[in-house]
Amino acid sequence: MISAKLSSKYQLCIPKFIRESLNLKACQQFTLVTMGKIIEMLPIRSVADSRGLLVDCGDYSSDDYRERATVHNLSVV
Image (tube, rainbow, N blue to C red):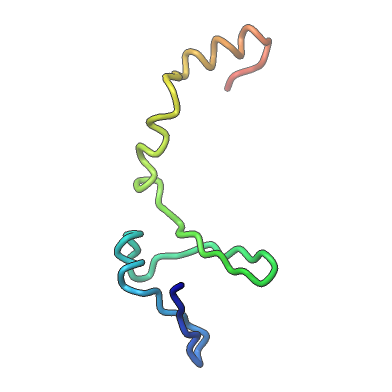
């Protein structure tokens, strides 16, 4: 288990090997989620960094979506 110390200014230092493995950068922002006594830090990624994230989600195209919506009488904007 890896530990970190909360400074007198309430700052945490993320160990170098974790920063490098997650490709974290200085001044990067995080979403903080609390669950009981657990704090989870989720890095906020830019849209550019998210490009290609859903590549392996199947062979869906917007044409298929529009066709299914038309069949089910749904309006597509």
